[in-house]
Amino acid sequence: MNEFSPTPDDYIAQHKKRLSWMPWLWYRLKPKHLLWAEPWQQQIQAELQALETITIGNNCFIAPEAKLFGEPNRGISIGDQCMIAADCFLHGPITIGNEVSINHGCSLDGGGKGLIIGDQTRIANNVTIYAFNHGMAPDMPIYQQSSQAKGVTIGRDVWIGAQVGIVDGVNIGDHAVIGMGAVVTKDVPAYAIVAGNPAKIIGDRRDKPATKAER
Image (cartoon, rainbow, N blue to C red):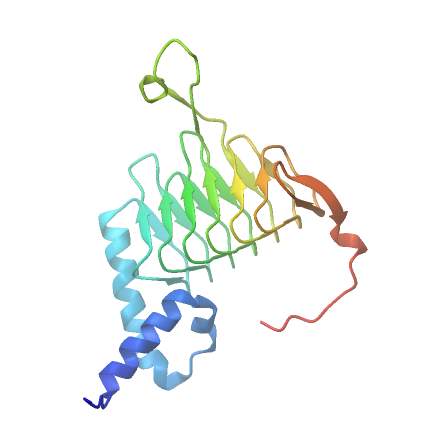
């Protein structure tokens, strides 16, 4: 049986994978790790901003496995202290506020009118947000019909659970919570807790007791 003796470079490579899938760990790195991590991220973000219509704020983490595409007039703007995990797909126009996290496997497309995500919003894994829709007239194939777009707006301090789907035209109010697996087809009021397919209000955050964050 062959034995594997990891080198320092092997440990760094594994640590990069861990950060890509759990990007909140970026903000816990020790100074000795930042010696290799900061230049690594600076290169990834510099290449994105040179090749695409993308602006990235301060102290952000972008996994190298994430795919971000922004054309002129369909750019992506990312605020400070944001993190985008592995296997995400983002296509502008998208405006992301400060301290926003987008976990692995999310698919976000701003369509023709754009997707806006407010400060401190948390998006769990495998969330799908498409800010456009196909025409569905019965007299021609759907793929031949022009798309329509209204745009999607997500407020501040919103928690979007894993595997949620959000359709075009939806506005989600500040501090709302979207339960795992929900399909959001209508506007969500501020502080509302919604779940189900289609999503319906099942509670209000203001009724929940205060808790101390563990992560």
